[in-house]
Image (tube, rainbow, N blue to C red; front, side):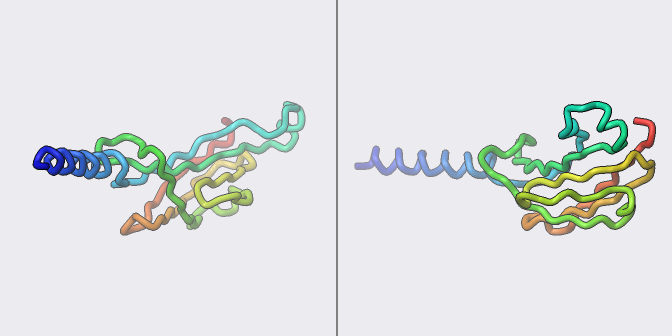
Length: 130
């Protein structure tokens, strides 16, 4: 009987440690990456003269790695440079796509999620000749 209780306590401690170090979200990072166009025709892309970007939120655990099996919704607001980009419709609140028309300037986003105490401000520089 005592072996059963000790085994149960060890198992509960391991589960708690696993949740605390691996699955608990301590920080959220945001990445903005340029992605390939939807059109395969390069001439169409040159005429349209636009770029497509994706914003990813990455939940980080206590070990500094991406949290497995968990996703985090976020909301956003553009406080500067809204005329430089166009938001594309969002299918879910875990991702954001926007397009720029090769104008140069700075775009400042404010990202909010349910776990952050304060919103995060992310600056993104658009360069015309990229």
